[in-house]
Image 1 (cartoon, rainbow, N blue to C red):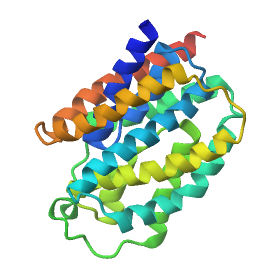
Image 2 (image 1 turned 135 degrees about the vertical axis):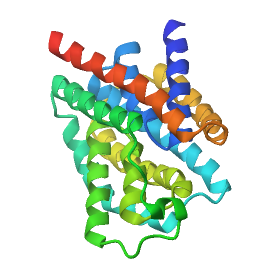
Image 3 (image 1 turned 90 degrees about the vertical axis):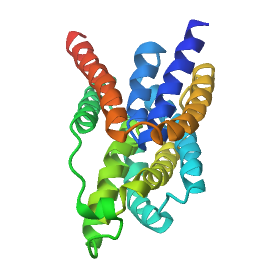
Image 4 (image 1 turned 180 degrees about the vertical axis):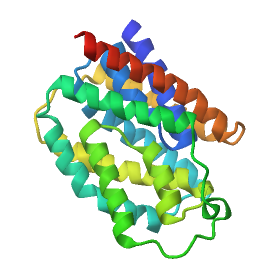
Length: 255
């Protein structure tokens, strides 16, 4: 019963973050699966991908209903990350657990800092008219890097996708969150496909309630984002994420 409550609570927080911010929640999912629910780092990153796919798809549908998704831009950005996500996903199952934990802690710290100290958006992000053509090589590089992070660490990478879409592809902020969920869904699916080719035990007693709560939380997150400022949401989740990241670093050092 305790595991069920923990799974539902953690899933709800992940869903709120993904639905409201387009990222950040998936970075909380993996440490919750490891430290609160007892999964190994390899199993947690695989389970994290399943949870991220279901939750991101739910959030994507909610944003699509409001017309807040740039489908063509998101598809092109995601396409650049499919192969890196698949390759990184296949390699990650061969990486020692301690290395995965430290790498994830570093990524979580970067995500937390980005949330606590968001960078000012370029003018095009607010106006939505774009700032001229974006170099294809630059956009492809950003998409490939995001795909590799998704595959290797089992996170959606929305905290990287949103600023990349705004900065590199001149997507307005009003559409960046929804578009990032499209990118996350595609990259996570590619990474999961290669991981499932390797035999791995999936604890559905944990994954199922976690995912269900995250999916419901994604709908609530979308509604919450319309009532609370994005900056306030980012600071709350950023603070939680920074505490989690520091805890992971301490745990890795003491082991």
